[in-house]
Length: 100
Image 1 (tube, rainbow, N blue to C red):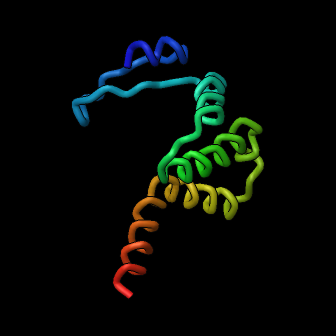
Image 2 (image 1 turned 90 degrees about the vertical axis):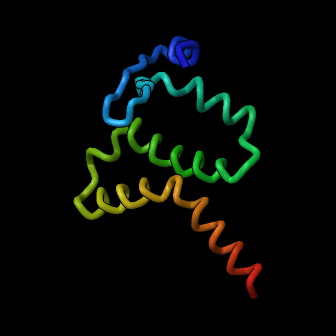
Protein backbone atom coordinates (compact mmCIF):
# COMPACT_ATOMS: atom_id res chain seq x y z
CA UNK A 1 0.00 0.00 0.00
CA UNK A 2 2.92 2.35 0.75
CA UNK A 3 4.32 1.79 -2.73
CA UNK A 4 1.00 2.57 -4.43
CA UNK A 5 0.59 5.71 -2.30
CA UNK A 6 4.09 6.80 -3.29
CA UNK A 7 3.41 6.24 -7.02
CA UNK A 8 0.17 8.24 -6.81
CA UNK A 9 1.63 10.93 -4.53
CA UNK A 10 -0.94 9.93 -1.93
CA UNK A 11 -0.83 9.37 1.79
CA UNK A 12 -1.93 6.60 4.11
CA UNK A 13 -3.91 7.19 7.29
CA UNK A 14 -4.89 4.81 10.03
CA UNK A 15 -8.60 4.88 10.89
CA UNK A 16 -9.52 3.72 14.39
CA UNK A 17 -13.19 3.38 13.42
CA UNK A 18 -12.50 0.17 11.54
CA UNK A 19 -8.92 -0.44 12.62
CA UNK A 20 -7.61 -0.20 9.10
CA UNK A 21 -5.71 2.02 6.74
CA UNK A 22 -7.09 4.41 4.15
CA UNK A 23 -5.19 5.85 1.20
CA UNK A 24 -5.91 9.45 0.19
CA UNK A 25 -5.02 10.65 -3.31
CA UNK A 26 -5.55 14.09 -4.82
CA UNK A 27 -8.15 13.95 -7.62
CA UNK A 28 -5.73 15.46 -10.11
CA UNK A 29 -3.26 12.61 -9.44
CA UNK A 30 -5.75 9.91 -10.42
CA UNK A 31 -4.91 10.21 -14.11
CA UNK A 32 -2.16 7.63 -13.60
CA UNK A 33 -4.73 5.10 -12.37
CA UNK A 34 -7.32 6.03 -14.98
CA UNK A 35 -4.83 5.68 -17.82
CA UNK A 36 -3.72 2.32 -16.45
CA UNK A 37 -7.29 0.95 -16.40
CA UNK A 38 -7.95 2.33 -19.88
CA UNK A 39 -4.82 0.61 -21.19
CA UNK A 40 -5.26 -2.62 -19.20
CA UNK A 41 -9.02 -2.98 -19.07
CA UNK A 42 -10.67 -4.69 -16.13
CA UNK A 43 -11.89 -8.16 -17.08
CA UNK A 44 -14.73 -8.61 -14.61
CA UNK A 45 -17.97 -6.83 -13.77
CA UNK A 46 -15.80 -4.22 -12.04
CA UNK A 47 -15.35 -2.52 -15.41
CA UNK A 48 -18.97 -1.36 -15.08
CA UNK A 49 -18.22 0.15 -11.67
CA UNK A 50 -15.13 1.84 -13.12
CA UNK A 51 -17.14 3.31 -15.99
CA UNK A 52 -19.75 4.70 -13.59
CA UNK A 53 -17.04 6.09 -11.32
CA UNK A 54 -15.36 7.73 -14.33
CA UNK A 55 -18.58 9.60 -15.16
CA UNK A 56 -18.66 11.08 -11.65
CA UNK A 57 -14.92 11.77 -11.64
CA UNK A 58 -15.16 13.77 -14.89
CA UNK A 59 -18.04 15.85 -13.51
CA UNK A 60 -16.05 16.67 -10.39
CA UNK A 61 -12.85 17.50 -12.30
CA UNK A 62 -14.85 19.85 -14.55
CA UNK A 63 -16.49 21.26 -11.38
CA UNK A 64 -19.94 20.57 -12.85
CA UNK A 65 -21.17 19.48 -9.43
CA UNK A 66 -20.77 23.07 -8.21
CA UNK A 67 -23.29 24.32 -10.78
CA UNK A 68 -25.92 21.63 -10.23
CA UNK A 69 -29.38 22.29 -8.88
CA UNK A 70 -30.44 20.51 -5.69
CA UNK A 71 -32.33 17.97 -7.79
CA UNK A 72 -29.34 17.29 -10.04
CA UNK A 73 -27.05 16.98 -7.03
CA UNK A 74 -29.44 14.53 -5.38
CA UNK A 75 -29.54 12.49 -8.60
CA UNK A 76 -25.74 12.49 -8.74
CA UNK A 77 -25.53 11.31 -5.12
CA UNK A 78 -27.99 8.50 -5.88
CA UNK A 79 -25.93 7.55 -8.93
CA UNK A 80 -22.76 7.46 -6.80
CA UNK A 81 -24.46 5.00 -4.44
CA UNK A 82 -25.02 2.62 -7.38
CA UNK A 83 -21.37 2.45 -8.45
CA UNK A 84 -20.53 -0.76 -6.61
CA UNK A 85 -24.11 -1.89 -6.13
CA UNK A 86 -24.41 -2.83 -9.79
CA UNK A 87 -22.70 -6.12 -9.11
CA UNK A 88 -25.41 -7.04 -6.60
CA UNK A 89 -28.17 -6.03 -9.04
CA UNK A 90 -26.55 -7.94 -11.89
CA UNK A 91 -26.19 -11.06 -9.73
CA UNK A 92 -29.89 -10.82 -8.83
CA UNK A 93 -30.88 -10.48 -12.49
CA UNK A 94 -28.68 -13.43 -13.46
CA UNK A 95 -30.09 -15.46 -10.57
CA UNK A 96 -33.68 -14.62 -11.56
CA UNK A 97 -32.96 -15.64 -15.16
CA UNK A 98 -31.57 -18.97 -14.01
CA UNK A 99 -34.72 -19.64 -11.97
CA UNK A 100 -37.03 -19.10 -14.95
